[in-house]
Amino acid sequence: MSTGGPDLFVICKSCGSEVSPYITECPYCGHRVRKRAPKLDREGRVAEKRRRRPPTPSLPRLRRGEIPGIRAEARPYATIALVLAGLAGCLVWRAAVVAGVHTIQLWMQAGTHLWWRLLVAPFTYINTGYAFATLLAIGLYGWLIERRHGPVAALLLFGLGAVGGAAVVAATHSHHVAFGGNGGALALLCAWAIPDLLAVRGRQEIDGDLLGTAVIGVVVALMPLVAAEGNWIPAGVGALAGIVLGLPLARMQLR
Image 1 (tube, rainbow, N blue to C red):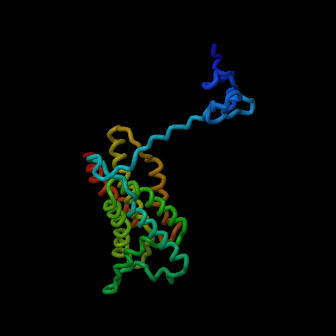
Image 2 (tube, rainbow, N blue to C red; image 1 turned 180 degrees about the vertical axis):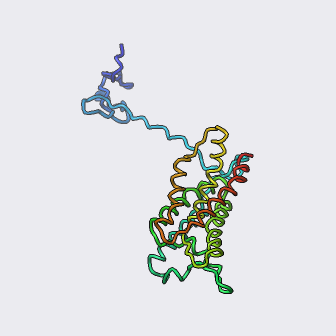
Image 3 (cartoon, rainbow, N blue to C red; image 1 turned 90 degrees about the vertical axis):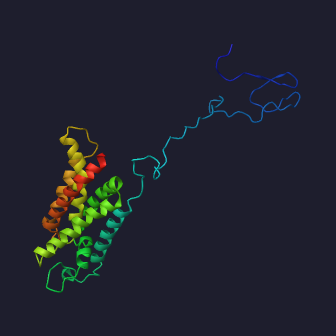
């Protein structure tokens, strides 16, 4: 009767003698009983072989055109470029490369307006906290927009919110400063939230965190209170641009 434990002896196939299961050669005829002696634990019992865990199943990255109607996964290069440009602008200012606010200040004068200031201002940060909050929002919602609609939509929203907001400041308030990409951040945030807001209105379940989005939006919108270089006008222009472009983008997503 077998007790489920290791055998007390094994039979040598050469001479038929009963030998210990813990040896590799028969002591009577020298025939090799087994290739390797079994491993013993601390209590002298035969150690069981450890079973390897099967590898966790994982799906490869979705390739372009693999599933019709679903966008292939890709790195958010446009968002990465926007965040790196903002970090570079903050470091350049901290390194005192730029002489002062008036070097790239936005103002309108007859015949002396420099268009490049509109492109430089959204990536220039004097206040580190302002840069952190704004670039965090740009990185998060730019990545979400780029994953949903592609890099062109992310760049267009940021351009309308940040550069467009700076242009409005330059056209309406000739001596006001408007640094940072708060307008672009709010444009990306509002455009991303539109589909979830429409779903909530239709009493449907959503996967996004609208409460966290609202908190981030309020923090970015109120940055001009703590950062002198911030401006309310780009924030308003960015939010408006995000809503206006977010509606058609949401309808395109539903089709």
